[in-house]
Length: 442
Image (cartoon, rainbow, N blue to C red; front, side):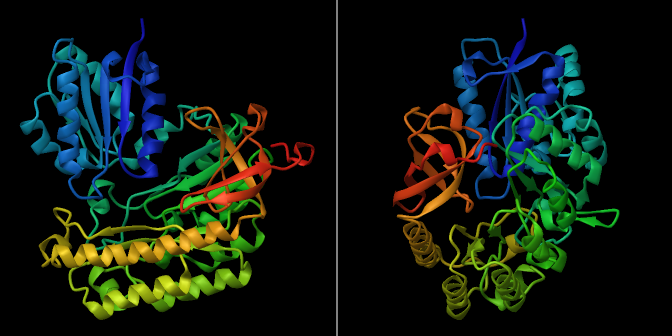
C-alpha cells in the first residue's frame, strides 16, 4: 500500500510551485498526496521566512502534529523552504520531533534523504545551494500540474541584497534555468490542460540565459497555441528593461497587470533599503507602459514604517499611490529579519507604524474598489478555473487577476468566456455569462 504525504505550504507562489514539484518527486518512492493530517505517513511543512514570526509558525504547526499523533504512530516530519535554510541548526536542536530539514536548493535529494532516514532513523539536514543540480533533476520528472493556471519557476535567488530581505541567504545567488528547459516544461503544462502560466522568480525579470531574457521567454510562450495567458512575478524595477517593456506591445498573451514592487515612495527610504532604483525610474516605467497600452494597471508591495521613515518620506509614499493608482497591492509594517542589515536599525514606534499602515491600506483599498466598480455593467474576458468550494458558482480570473464569480456549466472550465459584471466589492467581481455560442473555446 502506498504511503501518504501531507504537504502544508506557507508564503510565496514559488513555495507553491516547489510543493507541487516535491510531490512529483516523492511519488517516485511510493507516496500519494492526502489532504488529511491524520492519514499522513509523512508530514511536510514548506516554510517562508519573509514575514515576522515565520519560525514560530513552524513550531506551532509541529505542535499541532504532535497532538494529532499523540496516540498514533509518528509520521516522518520534514521541514523545507526558507525557514529550513535559515534556521536548520537551531531547529534540529530545539525540536526532536522534526526528522529531516531540507533547504530550497536541495529538493532533488529529498527521496534519498527519506529512504536513508527510514533505514537509519537519524535527524538530518540538507541545506547546500545547488540550483543547477536541482533543476537538472526536476527536468527529468514531469510537472504534472493540471490546474488551469499554473506556476512555472524560471529564476531563483537574488543578488540585490536589499537591507530588509533574507532571500539572498535562503535562496542563494541569482540563477536562471536553461531556456529550452523552461519552454519544454511550459509546453508539457499546456498539453496537460494548463491555460495560464505564471513565470516565477525572486527577481523574475533578471532572467538571463545565454543572452536570452524574460522577454524572449514571453514571446516564445506566445507561440504555444493551446496556452491562453502569460504572467510573471516578482519583478524588480532595476530589471524592467526596454525589451521587457516592448513585450507588452507585441505579445498577444501577456496580461495587462504589472506587479512591480516599489516598497516605498521615498528616494530617501529606497536608498536606506538599498533598493537600487528611484521613484523617477519607477514612474518612467509606469508611463512608458501606459503609453504602449493605457489599459495596463500596476500592483505593488509596500513596506511601511521602515527605519528612518519620517513624515515627509511617508507622505511621498501616499503621493506615489495617488499618482499610480495601484489596483491591488500588498502592504506590511516593517518587521526585522535576523541576519539582515535592517534588523539592527531603530524601529518606528508601533502605534505610529500601525496608523501609517491603516492610511496606506485605505488608499490602496479605495483604488482597488474603484477599479472593480468601474467594470460594473461592462463585459470582460474571464478564464474559468474551477467551481467555488461550495460548488454553487464558477470561479475565474479577469485579465487583472481579479476573482470573478458567476453561474455556468462545468464544460466552461478551462475556457475564456465573456462575463457581464453586475456587482463588485473590494476583492471580487460578480457577473452573468453572455451567450455561450460566442465563447472562445480554449
